[in-house]
Image (cartoon, rainbow, N blue to C red; front, side, top):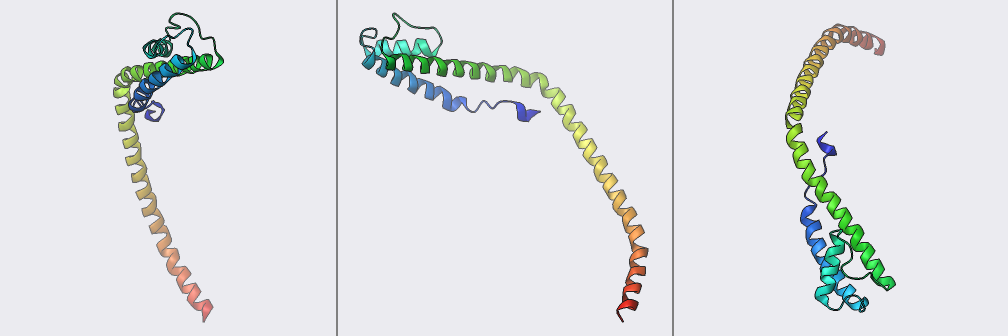
Length: 146
């Protein structure tokens, strides 16, 4: 069951990527949306508000490139928010599931011990049964080859 839990290690990459995206998109919005975004700082504020799913600060983008940048920021921000929420929720779930996981591991260990014991018993039975037949087969093979 632990294989189904999402890893939280991706946050080390996603959060810095989000910061870089906001800074780059802020510059892009300042360059393309000159009617709505008056400076780089306003562009970063705009990008940050879109990334955090707050919405547009001021007006809406007027150019196609500005709309594409805004749509990308919204989608990336929504995905980042969803994955961060899932990572935080998985912390709580892992604490709740820890006793059940421990019981499951103990059960699996017991089953493996039982299977090994059964395998050893089967090997012993096969050794007892094969040993007399092996002698007979060996003597028959020697007589037939000569």
